Image: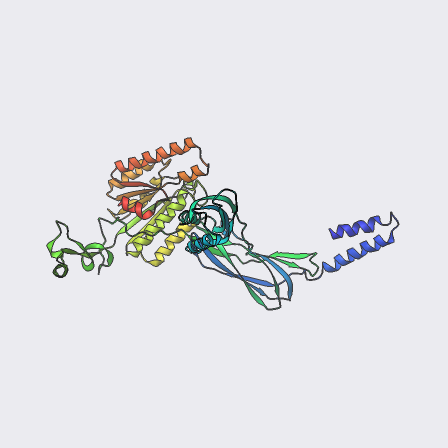
Amino acid sequence: MYVGFGAILVLFSPFINNIQLFLLGIAILGFVSVHTLVNTSPIKVKVTRKMENVFEGSNVDINLSIENKGRSIGFLELFDNLPKELDLERYMFLRYRLIPESLETTLEEIKAECDHSISKIPEVTLTNVSHRLEISNPSPFDIELTVPWNSDFKKDVEGILSGLDSVQSMALIEKKLLPPPKRNHTIIQLKKNQTKIHKYTLNCPVRGQYRVGSPRLRLYNPSFFFYYETDIQAESPLVVFPELYDIEDLGILSEFPKLYQGAIPIRRLGDSGGFYSIRDYVPGDDFKKINWRVFGRTRKLMVNQYEREDISDVLLLVDTRALSGSGTVIHNSLNYACRVAATIARFLLQTRNRVGVVFYGGYHISIPVDSGQKHLYHMLTAFARIKPNGNRGVASVLGDVRNFTPRSPVILISTLERDITASYALREIMARGYKLTVLAPDTLHYDRERNQISPITYYSTNVNIDNALADVRALGARAIRWEPDTPISTILKEVA
């Protein structure tokens, strides 16, 4: 802009015979020429990151270290490139209108009650409480707060506010998404051989294997007319593992346990000599298991329970077809399948069983059965990396199933939607004596709420999934639809 303005003055001033404009244009061009050479030459800066792998829904703290290996730098602007799937922690602004129960309710009483109740949720911030004087009585109160975006805190807040003793009714009157803070952007000054650390928090709402990109540096000259821009090669890997649910029990064990030398107690009920717990006597219990000492103290029959000493092999089959990725980035059947599969794998490995997993769809990935924390980390990494692709059905994993331990549990996580090989494949799995369990993550209601599918598509798909699961039950296997709003622990108890 300045160059163009100076050039115009130099070129057109002779036509109007104005030496002052000509000198002004020469001065502007000279000023710009000098400043293009001042503090805009390449610099030597080293950028490193320090961060850890996290689970879905967690925040990762990123420490960005900027080390100046060259001359002193006046103003250095830094932008850290982030994957589009990840975002800085964002918040939603909410304003509720509360109608008090009594005319005598004061602003201080409402504010104190809201402060006490909202403090139970540390992530939610109460920013303001105001009183609206109106002709109608009682006059309403407005409260303003910020809630983490993409979370269930909004429901918790509404439940707390509607349950306040001094509130008769409430209504949401304003809602907006606040822009993310520019914490991956900073302007610093660096002396020679000086190091500064910039910290910011990154929200990880969905599983995946990401690379935090090369930071972009922009060096300004003293007049801020010109700058030198470059990218620093400092990519860093970030793995976001699927969310793990809490479950208390999993009634899926092998009918063909593999007994190893020196059998290992797996902290489940069985018939070994290791004591587990006691329970009330029921008719039919073996008299040898009655705890007579407890009976002598309480005059109540109690039965000893013992640990089971075996190791079961369990195989997980996860549907990764392109169809499993339909829906939103967060709410799709593949994401929920990975979460429940990872939860089951962690529980079984913690109880010293052996677990393997096979992904089928566009590509075939098999992780053999094994045990231990290292194996769990290997499986979690695979769950984080997998993406929806292809259209190969469950029949493509029959080779892995045939080589699996006989009469062992096989857990298939799929809706079986549009899988023409499902009937044949599941019939062969049952014919070989495996204990088949089918879990179908149902995300159709998310698609319907966001108008991503038509009502006709919703109902037809709903019927097709129900029919497919009915065919599975007809084969003698266990099958159930799982709506993600229902706790997975409840579903697993139903399956068992």
